[in-house]
Amino acid sequence: MSQAVHIDQTGGPEVMKLVDVAVGQPGSGEIRIRHKAIGLNFIDVYQRTGLYPNAMPLQLGMEASGVVEAVGEGVTHLKVGDRAAYASMPPGSYCEERVMPAKCVCKLPDGISFETGAAMMLKGLTAQYLLRRVKPVEALQPGDFVLFHAAAGGVGLIACQWAKALGLRLIGTAGTEAKCQLARDNGAEFCINYSTEDFGARVKEITGGAGVKVVYDSVGKDTWNQSLDCLQPFGLMVSFGNSSGPVDPFSPAILGPKGSVYVTRQTLFTHIATRERTQQMADELFDVVLSGKVKIHIDQTFPLAQVQDAHRALEARKTTGCTILTL
Image 1 (cartoon, rainbow, N blue to C red):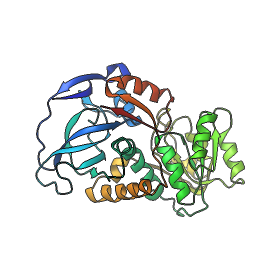
Image 2 (image 1 turned 30 degrees about the horizontal axis):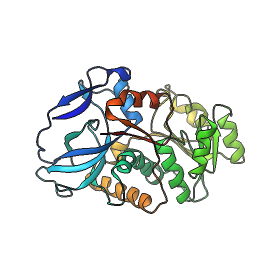
Image 3 (image 1 turned 90 degrees about the vertical axis):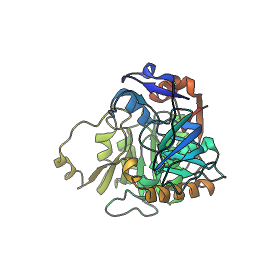
């Protein structure tokens, strides 16, 4: 048996319940993993509230680390006893132990702790594809300006450091001066406090009126329209979340007058759809973490039994960096 967090209906943090569940043996292409730590992400909130629909009952969670306890037929990249970490569909990481598909589970290097492994996979792989795989039509070069919203969050702090290592001039946004300073301390060249400043006007000032080549936006509704105006001609608007709510419908006709700009909606799970691509992306993430170019900040820790409090803190934007659930 394993303790796991389930919901029977969508709603607020109070719908999450800790229950006992049976854990079976892995089938073909699966493993059984005993968790050491679990990552907390905004996608967990989207699934809990029903913004991202799922069948009920639902075991929440997309990211964790632990030790492989059993391996099903056809799994060759993992063996019993391996330290491992993952970001993976289907949901289910909010538990002590689970059976799951093996394709997105990666061996965790000895130099990376279980806590760091649980905190970094979904957010780090997201930063990897944003900066390394999602490219504007005119490509990204060292010295280019990019705008990254929620720069003091889990993905944001990783992206700030990684962008600096790539030579990009990252402009971040955050909701407090303390969060802005945190982003600057982690590699953002500039950070705009959007609660006291007009970030669109400030971006134009910083870039001498030219705008940025890419906007990375996980905030959604509150930042969308103004972000489009921050782009230089042929720039790329990358939507990968909606913490403030979904973006309102818009006509593609507005993109031409704004500089023939591009818009894309990205999800991590498209990028890690194959075993080979998952491993390639994870290897690059492991390398930048082991090199010290990117440090994973775990700024909040909650026991699994206090998962409701963890969700409340995340939704209230009281968190910075990464948050993990401990067992």
